[in-house]
Length: 418
Length: 149
Image (cartoon, rainbow over all chains, first blue to last red; front, side, top):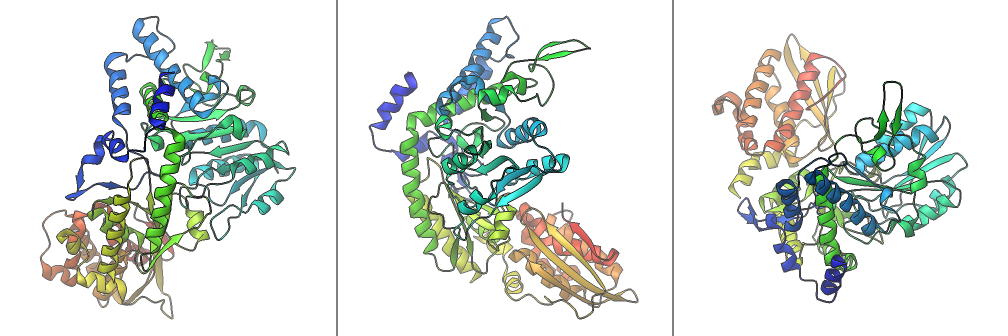
């Protein structure tokens, strides 16, 4: 209730980006003598004081292991850990906190599904359907499953705009398709995919869908019950939480039918040398001591985002991004890669005659942090015929003035390499 | 800015815009492919060796200004050198760009001394050394892929 009231209060006021910037201690620093302009949010976001304080408070006042101690600190730590799970459930619109599995991040969540669910449900000749704009983390686990089972990996093509070809997708769904794995927002192009359509078309045929939400959750409201997918994966550190914590959401009956993955403590009900009885979900998938402080930090990040209001975050970022796309594409010799009609968070671009690494180095010396490279999405780079791109990606604290700094930096790049 | 100018010296910019010996030879004697997984850069280096002496060396590929200029200037300095001398130059060059040991005297590396600024950009060391790793692989064997990892 406290978070709701706080959210309502902020909801009524204007989006005060300068106040938000003060919540992030790191943003005050200079790099190479220039004010930091952090535009690498798709790689990881910075952390607000609220998250940093929650982690410090956890270690300073309630550090203990969870689910096993009768003493007070363990009870406090367990309450904090499970409280974060409940907070995540609420944020995602899931029905039951048992549908929230804490893992290391999106990558581990996808691997869990590919291994635990995949080994049980995918056979030789079955088809696994992914899209042409997946991050390597939503390609490689499925290739591993394919190689183990003899299944076939099929890839839905993407259009010149950088959107999923929905007609092709519809045609490629076959009686052999066992699972669809698709990215919600592309980390390389910024494309927001029509995940509702993707899920709906698959579910009409009884095919489960995994959505990689790593680039979506911190930027827009995500409601998994409304989306109705079987699996939704994301990372805490891309939504202002700490590294090392991530989430797999899955429907309760799906999770309950899944065999365990890693074995160890906490995932068992009882163990003898003859037989082990496994614990209930979600604990069955959380072998070993989990990242308790990470979960606490994630809970604080959710509180922070809720207080800002996800709808306001989404509309602020959309406006900023429109401006960024216009400004970047108006620099002579600069080409924006991918022109999706729905975009979030990310602009990829190339500068004629200048390698993205050189762009990145020159911008860095101007204080502007962007990513240069293939963004762990080499098939996307190949699709657009570029070895790499420079990528600017945005978060709640970025400003128009920072986009001006990026544009000034790009002029510097052109000057240097003209 | 001075650090940046130190990295992107005029000579380096010139070679990156107009790389020398960027071609596939009519006859391929030895070649190797180099790959920098960090940025996806690829370079193929061709060498022909007679009596322990490098007669021709050229390259193909796409890369950043540092790696292109490094490949271009490498081909210029290695032509006519003995294989043993080529290896020794690589050692010196490696020390130069990583900042290990003393800064080599200019006369040892000739024009390659312009790469000294790379030492202040550790992430770019691999860009400068990729062509050299690749030429070493070409000299050692035939048709072998090396990476700078």
